[in-house]
Structure formats: C-alpha cells, structure tokens
Length: 330
Image (cartoon, rainbow, N blue to C red; front, side, top):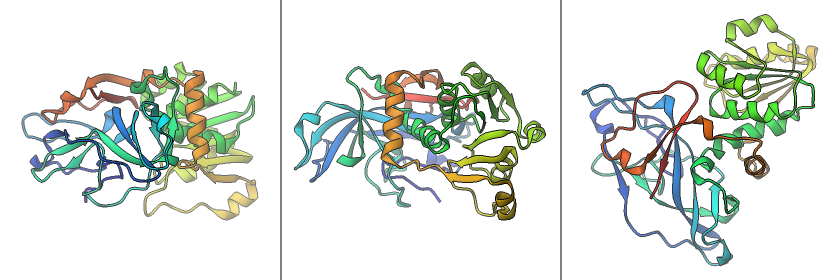
C-alpha cells in the first residue's frame, strides 16, 4: 500500500508504469487559518539510495523525502505578520495513511502523476526559524539532523567517551559530526558500505567496520546509538555497550524483532533510551548546530537539481553513500 505523510511525500512505490510522471501544482497559495502559516517550499532533499530507473521498462521509484525548507509566505489570524519572508524548516508531523493529504512532494493526481505542491500550510508551533543568511538548499537536510540531535541529546555524551554509531545514513553521518565535536576517546561507525565508512572517517570517526566485524568488540562502548531500525540492531547495539553503558535507538523496529533480554539489561546495568525525534528542543538543537557550523550537511548532497528535473519522472540512478539529491524550487 502506498502512503503519504502530512506533506505528501510517498514512502513506497510498486514497480509499475503508473509510478512514472511528475507535475507541479501551480495553483495559488492557500489561506492559512488561525495559528497557521503558509510556507513556500524552496528546497526538498530526496534520498539517493531510494531512487532508480530501469532502462526503458518504466520502473521508476518515487524517492523518500528526507527534508525540506522554505520561507513563510502568509500568516493566519493571530500570527505575527513579521514572520512573512522568514526562512524556516518545519518539525515533522504524524503521517496519515491517506493518498489525499494536502501539500508536499509526491501527492498523486487523478491522472496517475505525482504532484509537487509548492505551498504548505503548517501550525505556527511547528516552525523552526533560520537565520537570514541560511542556505535553504542545505537546510533541507535539517530533518535528519534533528534525528541525529535527538540521539545526541539522549546520549548526553561526555568528553573522552567511547561511542559507537550503528548506521551511516544521513542521520548517522550527521550524528558522527556531532559526536566528533565532543572529542570522544573512540568513535566507531558500523555500516556495510565502504563509501559511507570513508565519509564517516573523514568527519571524525576513529574506525569503520561491518556488523560482523563489530561483534568482535563487544562490551566496549560507553554509548551506542542505532540509527538503522533493523530487526537485528537492538541486540547488536546492546552487545557493543560496556557495563553501565547507554544504548539509544532512533527508529521503531519492524514486526518480528526479537525483544531485548531484560535479565541481561539488568545484569549489565544498561540504560536504554528512545530518541524523541519530534521534540521541539532537538529541532532547536539541530538548527543551532547548523547555525554555529558544528554540522555541515552540504557534503551529503550528491547533486543539486532544479524542480524541472522531475518533468519526465527521472532524477538519476540509484547512488550509494548515504547522500541526497536536493531539488531547488524556483
């Protein structure tokens, strides 16, 4: 089943001809209601590893939206009109399972095309304003940065700690930047991709290895953060943690995931936390670290495209490396 989130991004696409074709909604911006604003989207980040096109057989996936940014265009009743023109990102909202939700990248039209909506209506308390000189194209990656910030806040890493990060996707790599700023004694990144591993090492990780190789370093790390959400990661993360260590998870696990052994958790005195990725404070942290230059999402962008690149339903081949494509909206 195909689903859309509140902003219209699709999370799945069957390999059929019906998936091909994109359009842009040129209708006028909606009028915001009380306590809401209309944001004009200026950049959208799309996951490179979730897009592909297979020759002439019309097999095109609609990439998962990683994040987006824009400017406040209109304010509703009760909202300060001084917000108009401000650059902003918007904290994620719960995702309904309807294909008729309003706004955003990827909403399907009656003709079977996917429509990019340039104006989104959002509640005022979901705005996280950016500095006037912020690069909106790069700021489109602040959503995975907020996931990283949630894990960073939950872990409360101290200087000279031993840290392991499972997964080097966008969120994992941005977390590496945050952790590296704390001068850890060791910063291990566990990921099967050599490309992502090399990028992590260039950003401050002290070692990269695969999951199998990581199993040889059980019981070593003061803090272990899992960004993968895979079925095997809860047990793997806890095995890496030292006695009295912390384990932080950023994603829900799939059905059938083996539950953690409570007796082992108690015996080893492990603290297990779930990162609060929707908390306003972690988005504030992500924006602050972005503003201060502690994190730099720009190297994660594989290419910059204009919105017209969607015209034929093709935005390039699948790319490994935890990177994203950023679409600029004119």
